[in-house]
Image (cartoon, rainbow, N blue to C red; front, side, top):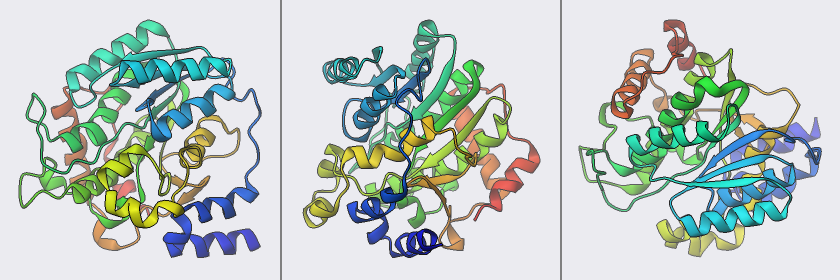
Length: 327
């Protein structure tokens, strides 16, 4: 009872919840994962060359996962693999520009050439741009990397799921935005990188809930919020924020904890939920961030069209309605 009371206070305080202090308080109640919790499991992690992606990869390695790591920088990717191997875990690196849907589809083929089963897929790669930049197909980069890449990779690998887990790394920034389904490419108004980022993080939460229903016989799907983490991405994209909050920010390992736990725990989990610090959290704080069933269908179909995929498993009509009722 005391734990729940303190957790609720932290959750509503935002600063207390998302910072190192929140993790320090909540982690007192965390149970340690078995050292071999992922022994023999194939785990794919995108954005694994730095920050929370690298921290997650190394924590997963300590749990004896077999790792397939994805990123743009071959050198840093191989370095992460070397660090994982020092933990005793098999690890390979695949380079990919996740802003290009065709490259993501090619990545999926390379992954399936390495393994016939995906036990855990962590869609961690993300970016926050300071200006509107288009990729070679005319896709706005924030949307292409944060939303579309994870959608395409999940669709392309879904045939290799069997009692698997998919974890989409979102952000508490989603609480500040709706999904902007009428403007996925940020074509109207003056581009705001923080707002574009928040929109995609809301989209990830919604798509995770839809995938949870579409893949219910193959995988459990989650979105998660790592808290405010001291990473190169935060230092580069939000220098002023980093300057004033630096001492309060979580370490990459603390930010990665929940995605590692979602990958490995044998405890009961709520597929489709939004997690932070090992607990399912509200998906909305205010009503205006919610979307209608019709808008959710448009979001899904837009991702299919823009990503060039036709998933074998799709949400049913009632699934779109169910996601609108998420609190």
